[in-house]
Image (cartoon, rainbow, N blue to C red; front, side, top):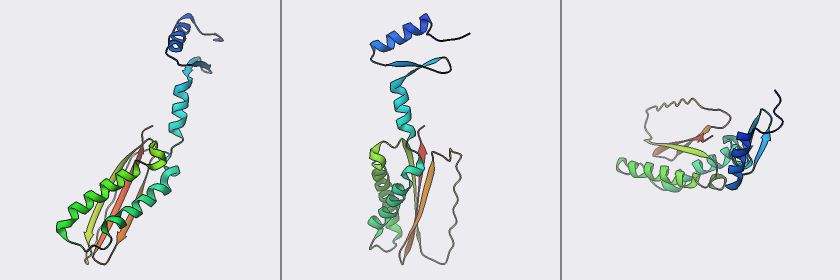
Length: 156
């Protein structure tokens, strides 16, 4: 059965949508699509992690340097520093790609005193490797090490 023109029901749906200001068009596969929705979907899909990765990495490298520069490790200050680094990082990430990147951000900040002890960490995620990603950096001075990881999860 060929479907070259819309059924009566589809015409009614399209007329109702036209009243609300939406323009519909017929696509292959026997369905009608709202052009505005298609534009929004195309706009959101243009933001993939690889397109914002360098900007995210720059932010993760700069924030610990701003907060921790000139400080020595004191256990009593670590809680404040980790909170400040995480919140500052999130604040700056909101502006990535003009604030419309379509991502959720997860920030993990760890500050360690430099000693002769090892530190091993691992993260595992099940996600879409095309759209999602993470950046991890290590910041150091003479008395402490800061490991900052940012996970970027696409909303699409």
